Each structure stands twice: as C-alpha cells, then as structure tokens.
Image (cartoon, rainbow, N blue to C red):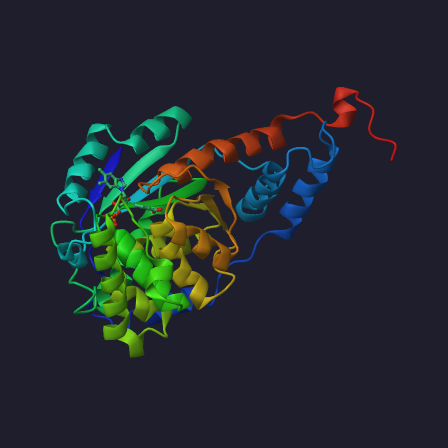
Length: 349
Ligand SMILES: Cc1cc2ncn([C@H]3O[C@H](COP(=O)(O)O)[C@@H](O)[C@H]3O)c2cc1C
Ligand SMILES: O=C(O)c1cccnc1
C-alpha cells in the first residue's frame, strides 16, 4: 500500500483555476468504436449460447471500448482511496467521531482494514491519498468548503491516481461525516427534498439522522444562489475527497483508463462531472450499490446500474470487489475458445 499525503493546490497564482477544468471537460475523448465492435464480434464467436455471460459481455465490450484495444487487460487495477476531513462532522452528523478518519488511515497503512483484505484477495493495488485530514474543511453550513484554487488544485491532485501505468481505476473514499456532504451535493445537483438524499451512513440513530437532514437543508440554503454551477457546488458544499475523486475520474477519461465508482460518496463526486457533461461518465461503471438508499436514487439519475449490491459502506470496498467480476469478464473474453477452435457445432438458428 502506498500512502500519499497533503494536497497542494498548485494553481494559487492562476486567476480562474476552474477554467482549466472546464477546458479539459470540453475535450473529453470518446470511446473506440472499432475496438467495441471487434469485442462484440468476438463475444458472438465464443463457445457459449448467445448472451450467456450476461452483463460480463457488456463489461468486456466496455473495457475494450475505453482501453481502445482487444483483448482488454485487467492486469494492473488500482484502488485509490481519497481521505478528507469535514468541519460539518463537528455537528454530530455521524455515528462515529471525526478522529476515526485518521485512525483508519493508520489501519490502511497497517493492512488491517476491509479494503486491504479485498485488494489482497484479488491482487489489486491500493493507494491512499491523505487530503490534509489534519485540517478539516470549514463547515459547509457556514462557509464554502474550499476556495476555487484549492478545489481545482485538489482535483489536479486526484489526477495522480492514474500515474504508474494502471489499466483499471477504482475510486473510493474515507472521511467521517462525508455521507452528509454527499447528500448535500446530491441535493444541490438534483433538487428534491433534503430527506430524499439523506440516510444513516455508518449507522446514525434518529437524532443524528435529524441533524443530517438539518445540515443538508442549511448548507443548500446558505449557498443556494451559487449552486447552479456544478463546480461551484463541489467547492462550496463538497469536500477534498470529492474534488480529488472528480479529478481522478476526469484524468482517467483523458488517458482512457476505465473507472469503477464505489459507493454513495464516490458517486456523488462523479455526479459533479455528469452535471457538467452528461457523457462524462461513459468510461465508468458503478461497482456496487451501497446500503445508503440515496445511492440507488443517484445511480438511477446517472443511469449507472451497479455490478454488485452487497450493502457495503465505502472505503472503495464494493468497487474493489467488483474488480473481481470485471477480471472474470476480461478472462472469459480473452481466454475462451471460439466455436470453431473448440470444434463445437454453432447453432443452426
Ligand atoms: C471504522 C470505519 C471505517 C470506515 N470505512 C468506511 N467508512 C465510511 O463511513 C464514513 C461515512 O459515514 P458517515 O457519514 O456516517 O460518517 C466514510 O468514511 C465512509 O467511507 C467507515 C466508517 C468507520 C466508522
Ligand atoms: O456508500 C457509501 O459510500 C457509504 C455509505 C455509508 C457510509 N459510508 C460510505
């Protein structure tokens, strides 16, 4: 496991750092249609009834389309966990105290967290990005979480997730209180009522749940007039791990690295890119639908059906487990014999 710490907004000197992000968003690469067509044709030849591998066939095609090659590979998958700390957590919006975030960073480094075991089980790399967790972002109910420079700089820091020649990226997170932030972002981006987007996170009781709903409603009211721009929403009612995840997904798109989105929190970060450009998540799959009810709602809005539905809670864990399915899809697509090679009679009609 590799631990990275402290993001540095690199663009303090620049006038409008979001312009750089918008410039990237204006030139998103598209999928490789020829690779996708080759993959589809091969699926039809493999020794199985047509469509018998179900969604695995779509996944293999998606990998080829975004990696721009047939056969695809899942030889160097990576889970990137972005850790952030949130001023809003001081409002008592989580079942756990804010100190747990840094304690979990130690657990990741020591190999004792759930995500360590899942990565080990399926030979997945793990990098943890500590986004200044000793310095929580201001309470979003009172102030913006980040300046524009810090937000854009943290997105740029997220770009580093794809360095090192990876062929599949899982985006995950750690940050006590961040389901409240995710709910606020979702409410800011999609409207509705605060309670539509709020759930129990790590196990909030009814009192804590009430505080979560209040916090979401307050933050959206305080920043209301500015939330029409998704990047403004990200910097005002988001947090550092949200910015870094959005940046990592964007960098992966530019480099044609397919992405697996983990739970509710990672999906809320991804939703910012989707709000900027509805095609921005075409290189992504949802690895897992978490126990948070609002996650399902968000995935429906983004038209991202989850691969798994196991009631897991963040840390990249559900996304990492989905890598096992994606590896199997890749192995079948690559290693299976065709009807001709296996000398099995193809169907007559
Ligand atoms: C020990 C522990 C390990 C975790 N791993 C992920 N989360 C998950 O819970 C947090 C968000 O939930 P809330 O908004 O209710 O605080 C995030 O850190 C998330 O990844 C954890 C939470 C805890 C307590
Ligand atoms: O789905 C998630 O990301 C999630 C849900 C609950 C708690 N922490 C994270």
